[in-house]
Length: 90
Image (cartoon, rainbow, N blue to C red):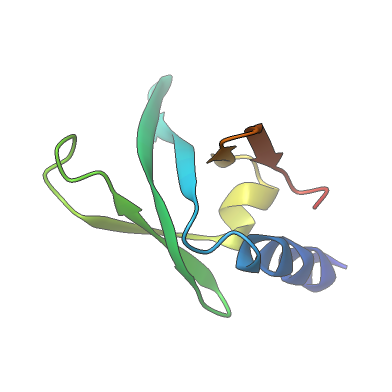
């Protein structure tokens, strides 16, 4: 079941490659890290986000689809028409 869910999350993200996103990640110790970037690529186990260079010292981060499933990472696609939140109920 979990593999199907992870595949659904990946398939959902595939449609948003190149889109601007807001990434919220659990930074530990009750910290939440928020970053803007672009969904650059999806791979079988991970996805890559290219961060806005003026805001961050490193350019790319990667997370697994399980991070979305466990809600360690929240992705929100930012479009001209509004925002679309990516969840584990993809």
